[in-house]
Image (cartoon, rainbow, N blue to C red; front, side):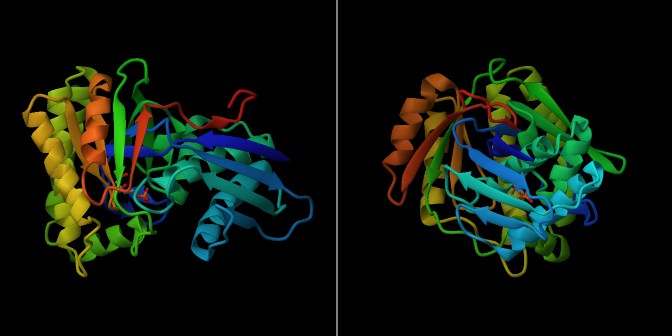
Amino acid sequence: MQAVAIAHPNVALIKYWGKRAIVGNLPATGSLSLVLGGLSTETLVRFEAGRQGDRVLLDGREDAETSARVTACLDLLRREAGVSDGAVVESRNDFPTGAGLASSASGFAALLVAAAGALGLRLPAARLAEIARTGSGSAARSLAGGIVLLKNQAATTVCTQLATPADWPLEIVVAVTATGQKAISSRQGMTLSEQTSPYYPAWVGSHAADLEAGIAAVRNRDFSALAELSEHNCLKMHAVMLSTRPPLIYWTPATLACLLRVRELRAGGVPVFFTIDAGPQLKAVCLPAAAGDVAAALGAIDGVRQILRSPLGAGARLRAAGD
Ligand code: PMV
């Protein structure tokens, strides 16, 4: 009744910000993302016979909101397995948690794989993705590896791997500019945007075209097209965030300095582009040969506290002997 799983966070290039239904946590739009193999979450789940309730430790600490979301996911799995035992969950990230590095995506992907493993459940990938989505909208994308498409379909979402890490070996350089937990979570922030940003309808209305263009750029391995489109989609999401009441300002001065530096590098011929999520970290996506120069350039910027480098990575899995 115990298993350990490993999952990696993912970063969306064509993003999701807003929901079409709270029940089932259905996103308003599809999304396209990269799985960051260099950053990991490791989660142990142990169901204990006769235990009442779950105990959830994230990086050694208990948190009521996270625990409630974990229990909601575990309840769905317990129902599938026909058991009622409570579980002990211990999850650790080797990168900053809750700071715009998609720890919720890798966290819920690892949770689901470990819990299903501990219960001996062999669920279809689509069902696992559906349950992961209730924990975090972007978690289904961490179940698959490489470059992943999450599309809306009828009353659910469908996750497809567009490319494996070997198909298109991109590298991601993360400039960490602040490590504290963000004041407003993605979940709260996107609800506020839906309710108050005058730009929200335009964001949703223009999204399908971005997603189709993103899929085409990945299929054609067209780095320049993906660069222009991803930066546009990212800044459009941040325009919605900035125009939310109260405003969602996730950037630090160093985030903006990194953004300008990435644009300067690309103008000088370096194959790199930026993306930023609901947090202060800037992710620079580059062709592997450029990663060293990009890391050095961003590392030299005032206010950058840490540089993380990551190739594309595999999907969530049970820990194997060599992991
Ligand atoms: O998965 P959530 O509910 O933490 O929301 C993720 C939202 C963004 O990271 C900003 C965009 C995305 O598509 O990942």
